[in-house]
Amino acid sequence: MIRLQNIQRTYASDEVETTALADIDLHVVKGEFLAIMGPSGCGKSTLLNILGTVDRPTGGAYLFGDRDLATLNEAALAQLRAETLGFVFQSFNLIDELTIAENVELGLTYRKTGAGDRKARVAAAMDRVGISHRARHFPHQLSGGQQQRAAIARAIVGNPSLILADEPTGNLDTENGAQVMGILEALNAEGATIVMVTHSPAHADAAGRRIDMLDGRIVASVARAI
Image (cartoon, rainbow, N blue to C red; front, side):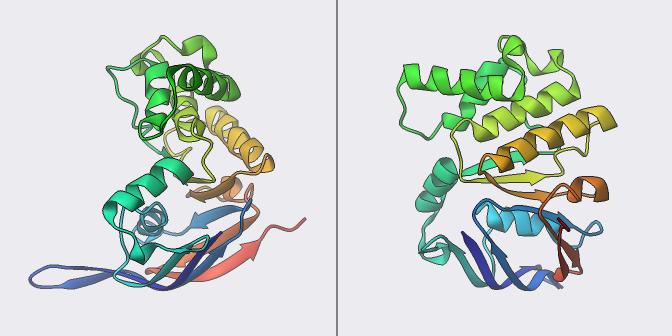
């Protein structure tokens, strides 16, 4: 599904050049649940941003299916994100002025769907994560766990082929974190491909494979024992 070949990402200023990623080779198989771990500043989020096409590598190749993303312009990349990717963030990124249902519907912003289909998709996504009863509430009226479930509903409302989760349990207590992980595991069991950045060894153990990063490089790849 995804193949990164010799990916590099550097950031240059007038005085210094910083290497965020170096020599990244990574293959993600369709239906896989991959966890990315490593200390702060090791390049985890940079790698996730490149996978999500919100950042471009300065070297190497990113193949998504049969497409070389280096050949796509910004409009084509935006269309790819809208049609195939779902994002889950540590800080939820819900819009305070919108209801939960309206926030979830944002996941369909760039999709050509009729009003009836949009309403059905939003209802199904909220039901999938157990927040249908909060559809008319606003984010500040929900707990952290409920807000993250709303964020997951927004990510999956368009039925993406790849879900990218950046520390999805980082702002949650143990119980709510476990509930969110349960939702991600269930989505994976149903066929969703998930790549998740996490600092939690316990949550990384839920993935089928874990890669460890250090200083912008992948230093280990460990498959979960079955």
